Image (cartoon, rainbow, N blue to C red; front, top):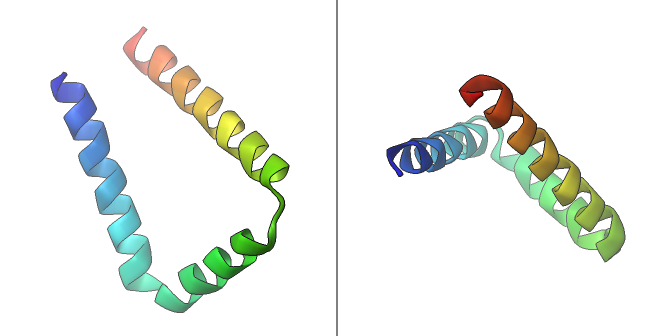
Length: 61
């Protein structure tokens, strides 16, 4: 359970750094995402989830 909280903390750190470093780029990206249909977003989300599971599986074995 501690690993889950560490992972969530790292996500927050990375997102915070991105927002702090390039707020305009993040805003433009969010506007572009708003224009996309649902299916490409679902596919991107599933691909990201699969890659995340594979990374955890490879690292934690």
